[in-house]
Length: 104
Image (cartoon, rainbow, N blue to C red):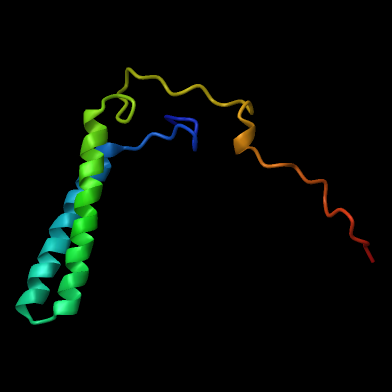
């Protein structure tokens, strides 16, 4: 079941993202330590950079979890009402085919 009218009000499964971030953080830190121990500073720097990016993503996800049901809806929060074509910014213009070209 959809939980939002994507892409305008898409909702993210933050608990799953939190778990995946922790998993990625474990691997990036382990990679950093392993590459430092075997004397590969370039690979260690790459893993450390990924760990920093992962930590920034973790901070954002934790912030959204703390902001409540707007970002982490429960079963008691109904889905957003679909757009029904009212938002013209999200609709593509319909083309009736190539215009101004001669067909052989």
